[in-house]
Length: 217
Length: 217
DNA sequence: CGTTGTGAAATGATTCACAGCT
DNA sequence: AGCTGTGAATCATTTCACAACG
Image 1 (cartoon, helix red, strand yellow):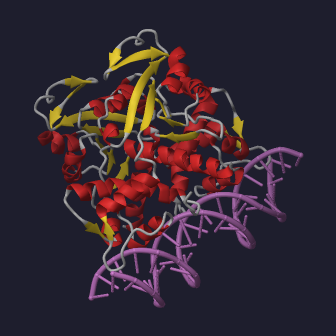
Image 2 (cartoon, each protein chain N blue to C red):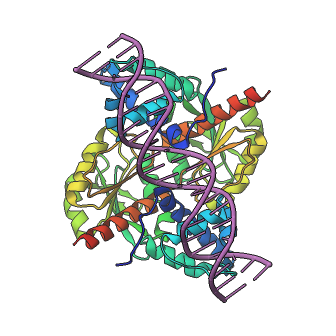
Image 3 (cartoon, helix red, strand yellow):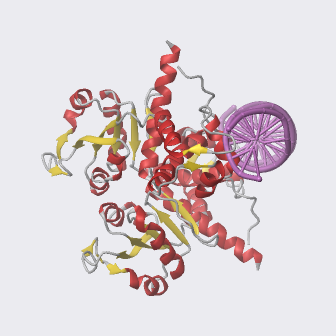
């Protein structure tokens, strides 16, 4: 359809951040925004913002900037957020429950439509308005309810098995919260959120900064 | 102390992944591992693994590879994981509770030692073995219990205010789960986990891949 | 004026390729 | 033979700087 240059991964990540920021700008009643302003709000340079947007076309008016609501709509369209996505959760432990009841997702067009668990103890329970179903039901539900994305919130041990099951059922992408690397066929997109990695990353930054300060004295 | 080149951020992130993988290798009884093997497990090239490790010194034996447990210990030391970190949670909602009771953290040397919330309704409740304390107690607790890292799991609206409070109390780093960009002084390290960004990222990948497939036909 | 969009330059990261060790 | 550590080459991303525009 539209001709696009290859999109750098860092750019793709920042698009989400632009969206988040534009959402706030709209709520605070702003009409127009410049690349400088948008960049400052996110700790980026103005040039960076413009280069990112340039991947997708021309949105701004020289001398004026961008129309906030217009820019937001266009980015939403680019990222496919104008159509919603149906999600399924697998693994209804502590984290799973928190994700399932996270309000924010619905605002942004992500809707959970089913929840599954391996344990017979939780199957049948009602959590966040969903009746938890057994893994055997995954295949049928993914098709019937047009589930695009499977969210894995199981222990590390079962994550790969669950991923295989979701892939087999035909999801287009998987978001993995289990602390383990998953293997999926190249047709399926994979994202991951590892809380330990995030914490370790931060602790590492702290320890590096501490060393710098010592060297400095 | 040790002379180090500047560490590329991608390298820092991968160090966490190496640690995770080495942990598994140890559990599966492996004694030695090559850069090729370690790289394959994580979807990286062998050269990449070696370059990463080279930032911190020489760990391997030519012709043989790396001693798994040795390498793990050394990376743990480099990342400061050989000493534990004390954490405080602020915001005991759904996500906060899940984080507080996440077992994995303790295994990796991260220990929650306090939990706080703004709402008088939850203050005083006991969650995951912690008595939830009011925000006024943050300052004293951070000092008394040597809290290094504050974890923010509040709604977006109060996140910045909470961050200011934690900074003021003297934490070295903040991990932010609220969907909002925080500003902290340059002396404090900041990490963030935004679930919506992670999902959007994945949805974007899916939408890009879908387009490619269409173009291809 | 102020701001965009964009080539060109600079910086940063990854991959290559091989000398040297075991 | 097999593998590490590393300089050199390639590739990717960011920043610079400026012409064109409202």
